[in-house]
Each structure stands twice: as C-alpha cells, then as structure tokens.
Length: 275
Ligand SMILES: NC(=O)c1ccc[n+]([C@@H]2O[C@H](COP(=O)([O-])OP(=O)(O)OC[C@H]3O[C@@H](n4cnc5c(N)ncnc54)[C@H](O)[C@@H]3O)[C@@H](O)[C@H]2O)c1
Image 1 (cartoon, protein in one colour):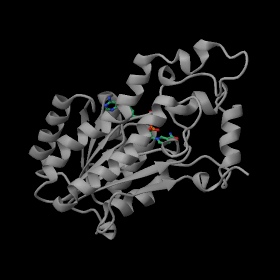
Image 2: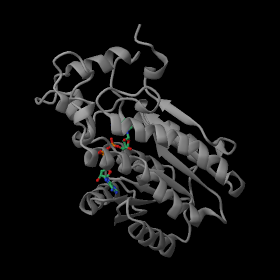
Image 3: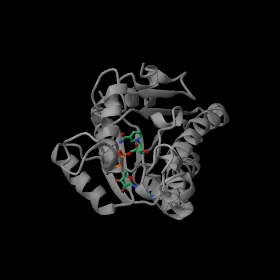
Image 4: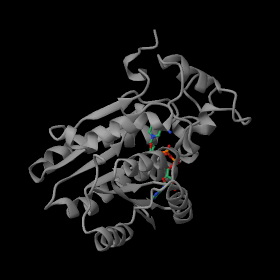
C-alpha cells in the first residue's frame, strides 16, 4: 500500500528537472499523476520513461499555467479520467536571463544597462508572471475540484524569497509573493480542508540557473556558483531527490494539521549567515 493510493495529483512543469523527480516520487507513493507542462512533447517523453519503470498511471498534457482556458481543459480531462483531484504541485516556474540584471551591485563604472536601471520591463514581467500568477491561476482552477473532498497544494518557493539573490530581481519578487500567497491561501481555504504549503529548494543545477552557476564547460563553478557552495553548510548542490521527503510529508495525511508553511530544503543555506 502506497501512502498516496487513490489520490490524483496534478504537477505543473512536470517535465522539468525538479518536477519530473517529484512526479516519479508521487507515482511511487501510489498517486495517479497528470504531467502538465507547456512542453507537451517533453511531458510525453517523461510519460514513456515512467511507463518503462512500471509507473503507468499518468496523463500527459500540454498546459500553459498562464492561460485559464488551458488549465480548465486540463482540469476537465483529469476529472473525466480519474474523477477527482487531491494534490496540486505548482512546479512550473523558473528564472530567465531576460528578467535578470547582469551587475550584482551598482558600483563606480557599472554601466546603466547592466544595472537595475537597465532591467527590461517586459522581461521582468515575464519572469514575475510565470512564477507568481503561474501558481495563482492553477490554484484557482484546480482547487475548485477539491472543494468537496479537500486537498493539498504545494507551491515552489526559493531561497530568493527571504534572502533576495543579487541579479534576479523579478524572480525574487515573485517567490516572495509565493510565500505570502501560500499563507494567504492556506488561511482562506482551511475551512474547505484544502491545505496550502510550499517547499523552498536551495540550489539545484537546472536549465534556469545553469548559466549563473556553471561556466560553459558545464563543470567549472562560476564565481557565483562558488559563493553558493561556500554559503551552503553541506557544501554541495541539491539532488532533486532531496526534495521528495518534504513533498511526501506535506501531501500525505501525516501533515493533516500542517498548512501555511514553507519548508526549506537547502543544505542549511538559510540558516547560515555566511560568517
Ligand atoms: N533549480 C533550482 O535550484 C531551484 C531553486 C529554487 C526553486 N526552484 C523552482 O523549482 C520549480 C521547478 O523548476 P526546475 O528547476 O525544475 O525548472 P525547469 O526549467 O527544469 O522546469 C520548468 C518546467 O516548467 C515548464 N514551463 C515553463 N513555462 C510553463 C508554463 N507557462 N506553463 C506550464 N509549464 C511551463 C517548462 O516546460 C519546464 O518543463 C520552479 O518554480 C523554480 O523556480 C528551482
């Protein structure tokens, strides 16, 4: 018996580096999982890979978390196939160079275009919207299907929510909004027995941060990557599997009285001042 037997989960951004591993974990615990990703091809490839491991209870859908219609189609397809939705993992998100300012600080000689003053508003809005509205809108659409049964929402926060990282202004603002929204929605939906929590991953090498952490050879740490390792008391990047314990706990009945929390899974990053 898996601890999530009978449960149906929707994972947005399921084809991504972190969420594909979290998806596998949910399946191994017995849940049926909707692989909802903007990149339908990647979702289908993941579906095949999982099926090859005997994890066949999946539905792969092309879904844009920023389009209500697309989310509603996914919700209806899930209900038509499995009749219920118990878990939503808001995994779609990430940083993007177009919402990032190259200079860490504005020092003498910093070019305006490399600083805050050069941040492109469209790029800022793209990153901010994907990371905040891209969790709010799916919660609106999928939680409606949980109103009679109760359920659980997992948002994905970041170290940058509480300790804003240099360069990533839009991402930091959006993830801070995620922490706030997690608590707000937890309060709002508690009477409906829908729990809302978040996981704040430390540093994991994925597409969204590779350009910031590793040189072009894909191995050598950038100066920024080295700083991250120095400030992580466990002195390593996370392995996506490190996230699965917190995920399993938060979506299972063991956390039935837990709502509105953000759990860091960060090798001690947030605990360490760096000194
Ligand atoms: N990698 C890290 O170190 C780290 C740290 C903290 C938080 N996070 C967060 O973890 C979450 C997962 O990120 P990841 O590292 O697995 O990233 P990733 O880039 O590997 O995956 C993101 C996935 O989201 C999908 N996606 C993008 N836009 C979408 C949209 N509009 N609608 C639906 N799907 C969309 C992409 O196709 C991709 O499959 C993100 O919220 C990210 O901000 C990552």
